[in-house]
Length: 402
Ligand code: ADP
Image 1 (cartoon, protein in one colour):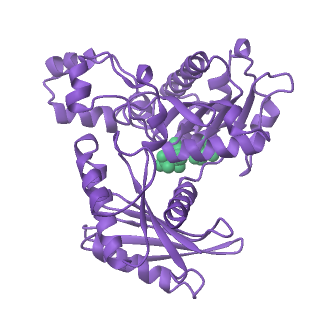
Image 2: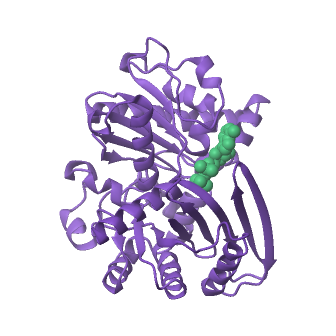
Image 3: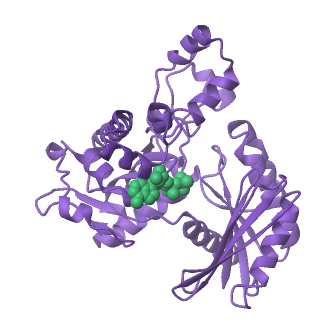
């Protein structure tokens, strides 16, 4: 019983093949630089605890050819990870707008509705659609399921998703908070409940997904009630290269002061801001190393980054009327103890207190890092967005056949 998860970007396709009876990965890979002179497919075959990586390079004209490469790689994997026994394909789709509150079996109508959300995600949804169309053509005999980054946050109430703008902008242009990283927040919320040995339905969680992109979510009884990313992924926490929260008037100021146009400003806020904007470096490992060696900008970037997280923890504890656990996940959340410590420093009044020794312990397992007397739990929970997409795909297919 296998499920293939596909995440198609404009020039890349990420994939992972799961055996759903074991909930384990059989193979995974990334094809990059589609349409350029030299594309590169890195394929990883899982054999027990061992991973065998292989690399293929050459020209890949388009996503259709890309899928042929991926199917070849999966098929050549010694019969272990081939597509025999495939029961469905799960597609990551970035924006489902208000249309999709749950995963959907893809048919012509669903494709039209995903296309309808393109104005909200002009870069991502078209690439996701190309991936869907090509994969459906090459694997027509299994159901394909769309799993949306935004769907988990569709439970956010009106007072939290509406911006204080003229209401007609919401009605006519769908301007509101949607939120992203939904599959990660959903996955981590379930794992956190399992680690705590308590039903998700009675927990108030602040989840901090800190990767290159970063977002916080307030999750009450398993439902998202607020999240820091907004109509686009630009709002909220400081990220690798995105500014996060900003006085909107800065944009008009900059437009007048620098003469930069909309596209240039948008690119600056998305690609040249955040950690990179402050310190010229967006990789947290490198920043921590630089700060250790006395680099003042690196220290400043880390301070601004951590302070923003702390502010959001406080805001979400207030929004939820208390907190049972603060949960850290993704590259920085899972690995950077120093950032976790800074983000939670001074939060004793909220019952949030990290134990330095537990925080310093490394590992790939979900774990608790609060002090024995901390009222709230503080958890590190590795995320697995691909596995969550595979699980939601399987659920969706089972509901269809029930
Ligand atoms: P993406 O959003 O691309 O999936 P990841 O979740 O992989 O990103 O997170 C990438 C970030 O995690 C980078 O800033 C990287 O430096 C940071 N990171 C990864 N490992 C460590 C580590 N051991 N210590 C500190 N930061 C780390």
